[in-house]
Image 1: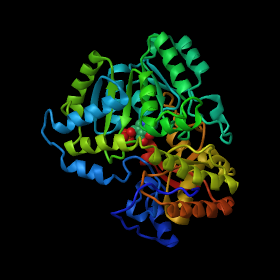
Image 2 (image 1 turned 60 degrees about the vertical axis):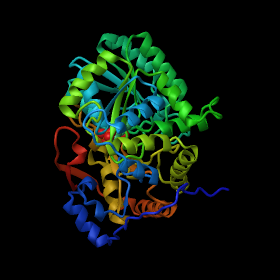
Image 3 (image 1 turned 90 degrees about the vertical axis):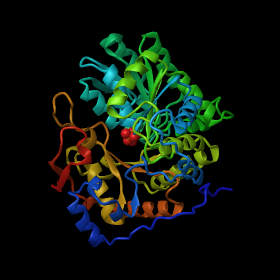
Length: 456
Ligand SMILES: Cc1ncc(COP(=O)(O)O)c(C=O)c1O
């Protein structure tokens, strides 16, 4: 069968409120042209993020009912911990309320003011947490990722030559850890190959530097390896994931992505001494080490979701449905990052709105237009998000100006995606009339969440 079907049935629904263009004009102006400041109920299709927005299964909801809410040593904690150890293979598991809390604890024990932390591309919270502790977050994307249109299958790879040079230039003693993000969210949701992970691991370990994986979308990455990396065709996603993590010394995880949970995260390591320090901080900031900021029922839901996400029919559906949207955009001549990533579609806003210069935020302008046109909410990943140099405080264009349409897991159907395609096509047809934006108010860190804009 050629038709991609959602491999699940829907037994509970949430109504979508339909708004008119006139209503949306007023609503986006009231939100200062920042989709983060809209009320969710005023959005028709919400592609702001795939984080914490998944639909949980009947099994996960059922597991929540057996959540053990004991303060210490709850049954749910052991179920969660054993699942994480089984899938990820690390010895020490530290539960947190979401991914950035795991990052904050990790960097608080590892990063100092003279630290440099490389990644294929840091996610915004990863970068912000490193910079918060005075370190320098360095992106080392592979050269293939510069060509947004090529169909190179592992554009999430790290540039190995650049990593070796960074270690030689900075000295291993200034690099407390090397990270790689799977899939590479800020770099277009592109996967990292097993060969690349192996190389990063070899280089890091030979320099005596711990290697961590930002594991948010580990299952999607594993399925990309299965489908596109020679030698893995017959290997299941769970086994591939195990191999990926076997090359690493630890990981940070947001369970709000590849485990279908609405909240949760964890930090893993094989270093018992480090874990001891991390747990002391955990107790101060998140909670006791057997719940870490989560309810017992959340731990249960994550334990179920982590197994469900490795189902090959789900993963094939996930990758194919994202590819469906990307293929239709590409065929219509709309600039879209190729090939399709796992969790999101990335429009190349700099080329889509080529008359708008980066410092007038083409990605943000496109997000506003998509909302106006069809009530679709998306997020800029470009100069608004990454345009401030943390050390000089100066603004300069980001490497790319993308608009990310992140697809919540198991939430929308193919007809929702057809509606999204129609909305994007309509904006594409009238793109010459779209105006750029300027910032009227913004905080110093993570400004994209709360910045206010007006049209230039
Ligand atoms: C790659 C990556 N790392 C870290 C995070 C942070 O996770 P959380 O939102 O759970 O704090 C995210 C969230 O979107 C992410 O995509």
